[in-house]
Image 1 (cartoon, rainbow, N blue to C red):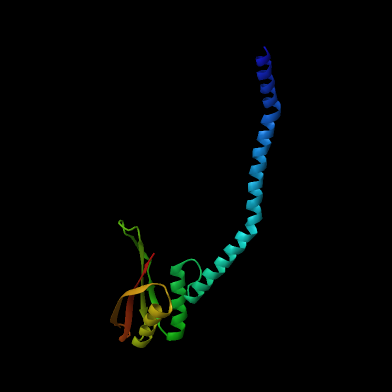
Image 2: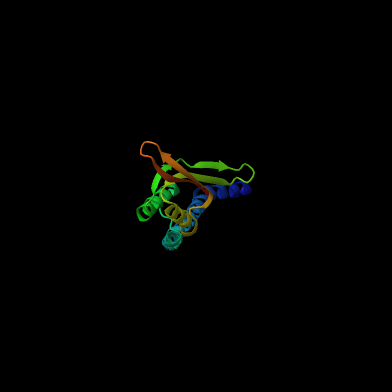
Length: 164
């Protein structure tokens, strides 16, 4: 009877005293973990802001800005066309190829320019050396004639390839 009374006393003591203490203790440790996370948030924010500035500087040095590479190429071509005096005849949708074995993506941009030979060479050189859009994999010059005006002009079809 004494043992049963002792066990009953331990059961009620645990049920009404110790269980609540253990629950509150685990809640306190959980809240302390959240407090540490909130206190370290400004330091993480400062670190991420510095990393963003560093990456923006790298992009600025490589003459790449914004999100869409296709828009950046078109913007660069428009800027160069004002300086060099050539025309952008066609800018087609990029072709995206994913290699099944390596899971690497290759994006190929196809565009056609029209102008004199020297200005087209300057643009090709600038795209290859000055800007980091990718590699110029093919350049095809074609001399065409407009039969209505009997004028000849030079067109250049360019393939610019970027490995992602």
